[in-house]
Length: 343
Image (tube, rainbow, N blue to C red):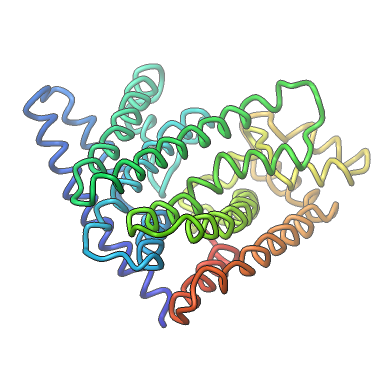
């Protein structure tokens, strides 16, 4: 199997479905309140691009559950629209100016209070547009009801993870690895990996046992995904990432990298972290100095090790999920891709 070709083909299918639903939505906006059409178009443009990983995993979960029919691509598209809505809010929270190699939505809309306000509203619209697409799909009503309940639970978990991420620096205690792993589980792992796989399986009519196993596989894989994302957020190249490689340091993001660096840093290294980490606008020199601390304290090496451990734990579930060799290969390739990716 040419795995890169598989990802590309699936992503193209999902993006075509996204465009279809977004065009219908834009036509509705144009009819109701044409003044807001430019804002709807800006949101729609922000949906284009990206890896479409979550949508691909929905299709894969449906395939593993032996689902029938072609309607799953619309569900995948709905979830990707949901993902873009989450990113729109996340970029406001993190004050990130770049997303998918383009200005973040709130920057595109002018920044400031106006741009932020419209972005929050568009994100809210995106959540309910995704829900509408799922509710109007042609799946059995009982399966749709179960799927929507599951999406709602996933979004509640994601919101709690985001709140914990924002709150942790204000709790007046040292950041600990268990706190960061809890953020990763709720904010990223579930909505990025385990929930898409489970959502696809739910719509296939799969039994609870399979859905639970996909959840365990996905949660471990999702934590590894976030650790790798945090590594790339500091050591990646902006052109490949499609976003800033300074923003995580600028905002003082809660990561295993910073926890391990603080644990092992000497006085001079702590001075560097105190000067640059979470202190706003970062120079190229500041980026290199923080990178140097992460390397010399072995924080980078440790984060890579922890990510590998979670990948290995995830892989243990693959034989329990399916006996189909091709599907096992896809799950193996997904795991390898997420830990080896450069963006």
